[in-house]
Image (cartoon, rainbow, N blue to C red; front, side, top):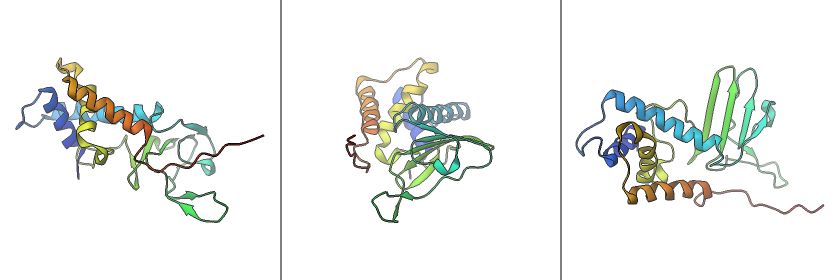
Length: 184
C-alpha cells in the first residue's frame, strides 16, 4: 500500500527539499496534502477523467456527473449495463462524481475497484492513482509543491510527470464503454 505520505515524501526528495533519509516536517506534510488533494480535484473537475454533466436529481447520478442537491447523496456501487438485460456493472475505472449536497462538496474518483473521496484524504490513506505509477504520481505532486521552495524538477522527472498525466487522460489502462454511432 502506497500512502499519500509516501508520495509526498518522494516528491520532496525529487526536488531536493529533503534528503534521501529525511522525512518532511509537519508544515511541509500539511502543505503537500493540500496540494495533492487540489491536484486530483483539478484533474477531476478539469476533465482529465471525462467531462462532468450537471444534474440535480439524485436518481440521475452516474459516472462523470456533478450533482447539486439538498439532502445526502449516496454514491452508487453499480450501474445498469444497458445491454438489453437487467444486469448491472461496477463503475468504470477512473470515473468521477462530484457531489454538492448538505454535507458539503466531495469529489469521488473510482480507482481500481472502489470510490475514493479525494477531498477527504489523510497522509496515511492509500494514495489514489498510485497503483498506476508511484513515481509518476509523485513527480506530478512535486510540480505542485515546487514553487515555495524555489526548486524545480529535472528534465527526466518533468517528462515522467507529463507522461503520467497523459496516461491518465487517455485511460489506456481502463475499461471504457464501446462507443456506438447514432444515425438520424
